[in-house]
Image (cartoon, rainbow over all chains, first blue to last red; front, side):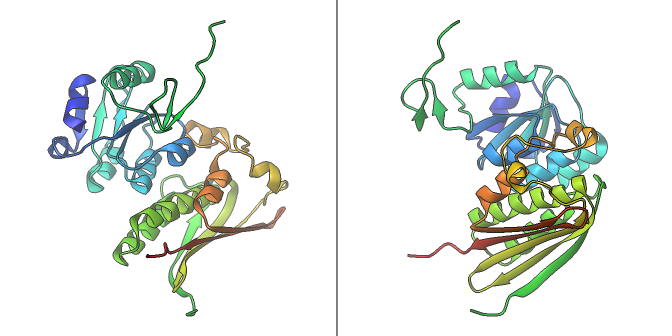
Length: 133
Length: 145
């Protein structure tokens, strides 16, 4: 899915990288507030949804070639972070939706997570659905 | 095998979260200029960033050294600091001694060393309590068929 379609689904504000949104194809989504988890589990051409707005999230994005970052809960990074992202051509968006809802919207729209796991058969790997308690 | 060529030697300052990540960024850009396989660069970048952040979070100061030779890439992360009292525990996913300040920035998931191990082809860790830690990360070029 193109990043511009994701921006519309999340009704997100564009902080930088507007010219890239029509071209960048997002393959999967990672939602996390832990940098090492992002580094460990995110694959190439992923979009990160996070509440972290410090400069290290841009550093991490640079290391793993993320398609872009969506800041959730209406959190906006400082100008230094936006400048770092602009220099590295990493689009930044902000949505008012919380992390869970944002991920849900994109999952419903057909975007998978980075694990390759699926509760139903048909994913790379399937896991047993938990029983309701 | 050719002699390893040192391409970069970058000092890393402990507890400086403003410059943290610059060494890994320079390592990545240098490898991209050499035209190395992008999947290999990704592994080197992740491991180097994790190792650099370990120095920033846990040590007084240190350095990142990038070497290349005919067989692959080697990154050395060496620091002066408190060392690792129990290496097996530190290698366990989820274990962390990161400060509250580091945790507030999204670190301290306890995935740093496990991540480094996952990304490297060969990993050597030499650590001494109250002296420091030396991490040698080796990455082999993919074989072409």
